[in-house]
Length: 134
Length: 393
Image (cartoon, rainbow over all chains, first blue to last red; front, side, top):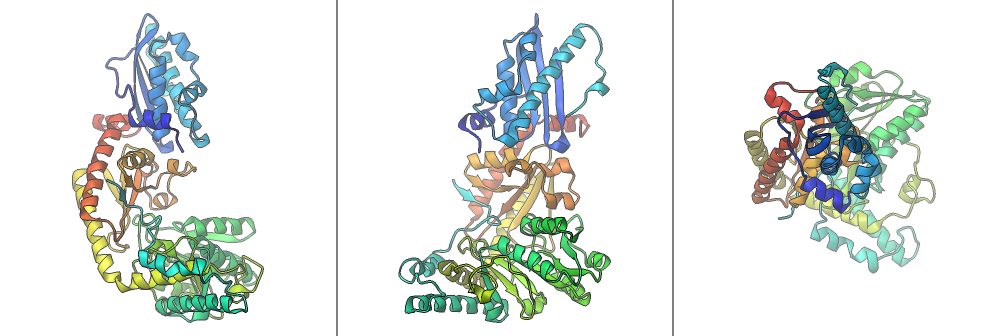
């Protein structure tokens, strides 16, 4: 049901792990739904220079995590905020319909990590209780 | 290395079964309902097949109805009896861990105004007789509980459950699709009214099943048309498939004890290694009451589909109880009914062994499984949290 590109991204994911003392981090999803994604970013002068992910989820979740992190490296934070799940799916040349929701997590995790970066930059400690998990 | 460990899903057709079937595709192709010699030859083959099934199940030949498989037999048993007996009452009882062949028609009955009770199971997947006593009433017309579960292999106390059903004037059906390859089943000993089997689980062809219906039990037809199967199930009977079913059933009886012991030894070796070598796992099922073929494990912090696919990349075929693999996104209803936490149920895999598997293959599966779980856990944020002391986010 998956195309070759998705299988490849799942079998050999890039950017697995976490960045120590990241400039931005975002965790979305929950274990009950079977998907959790955590993305950490290294940002210099508003440009994302490194991104890493950890994902609990199906093959589509892992493939989209890997692809999304690859896509945002080199982008400015403003550009990365414009990244949609549709673009990630396009990059993977499509996902089965019931797996599209997995790609939403990647978009959300990146947005959350950038929000975290901006909050930190403004020296506002982020209130963890306000993170709502989808 | 290519390893097939998904025998609860299907088994390869035995060579002897295939050979028994072949003449009925080409030379003896007549419609078993035709009057001429071609037809009579087919009818004769069908009679022989029916007699074989009847002898093995311990019933009369006219109590054996050939169907297209387990799902049709399940549907027919449940809907057919519930509809036929609706004047007595509109209450149906099934277990919460039935195959979809029973679950879905039960939902259909519910939408058509029937009351459906789904019996709970304990954390090993066992239905308790007291629960049936508690929920059965004078409106109950049919009780359907599977003999062995297809995901965890737990064997149910069918004889005791059937006794309760009969005491309350209800009929009893049991789905024996997973039990028949491993258990000697005699319908009068079990004292059931209806019973379902499917050939491709015991090295027979797909698309071939049986519904045993005790003489005197009436049920509405599902498929209307010609007068085949004593006018109860219309449609030209698939003669080669039924010849294959009977042959496969016969062969499976011949070596039952030997095969069971061998398959159990493979499974036990698998379980010993998994339980010793992989941390944070949960064994699902009942180690005292189960068929020898199935081992079901939940691997915490990882998701079943990923496990299944990485094993598949290594040539290993298993099945995931997890949602993501089938279209539906819900985790296994069987594991949830057993009280497996939902986040753990997502990482569940069913390994089901057969007579063709070897110890070497089992070792290969465990080796690749260890690699797979380690790899996915390294990717999992939950595993990190576990190491840090918190479990869930």
